[in-house]
Length: 260
Image 1: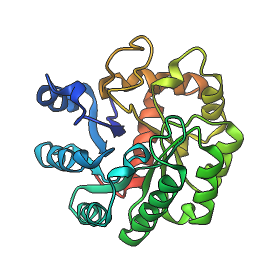
Image 2: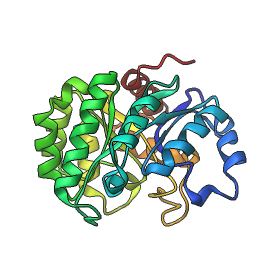
Image 3: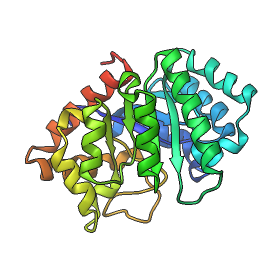
C-alpha cells in the first residue's frame, strides 16, 4: 500500500480488545495504518487513552466525555480533561456531543456539558470530535450558537441527511466515515459521501463497533479501513489509494499534525 491510513476514531481501550490489545495495536503500522486517534468516552477512558498514547508512538488521544457519560462529569473531571488536552499527544476534545437515542442523561445535562467542552476546545485551541445520535436539531443549534466553525473538527459517524451534512461542511467541518457506508441499506450515508467534497472526509472505525462488510456484526478494527476507503472510492469514482491519501491529509490538517 503506497499511502498509509489515518484512523481518526478508535476505542482500543475497550474491553473487547482485552485479550489481544498489545499485539493488535502494535500490528497496525505493518497493516497500513500509521496513525490512530483513540477517542475517550467515559471517565475511566481518560486514563486508559493516555496510557495508550504513551505506550504506542502511532496512537494519539482525544479527551472528553461522551454524552452518555456526562453523569460522571464534575469540575474536577473537567479540569482533568483540560490538563490532558495539554499533553504532548492530545489532538482533540472528544468524543463530545448529544445522544437522544438512549437518553442516559437528561438533555439539559448533555447540552450543558457539550457546551462546556466546546468552550474548552476553543480555549485550548484544539478541534473537537462530535457524537450526535437522534439529536440532529439540538446538535446543530448548539454548534451554531458556539460558532463551531471557528473551533473545527469532525462530525463522527455521521448519520443524518446530506442537507444537514451541507451545514457542517459549510462550517468547514470534516465528516467521519466508517463501516456503515459499506452496508447495502446505508443509502443516506452513501448520498452524503457522494455530495461531500473528498477534501472534507476522514476515515474512522469507531472500533470495536460498526465493522464494515464483509465483517458486519463482528469486532471491528482499523485493519478493516481499506473496505471503507474502497466504498468511498466507488461512490466518488476515484481509486481507493486516492481516498486514503486525501483523507490522511485531511486528518493531519484537522488535528494539526505533521507526520511522515
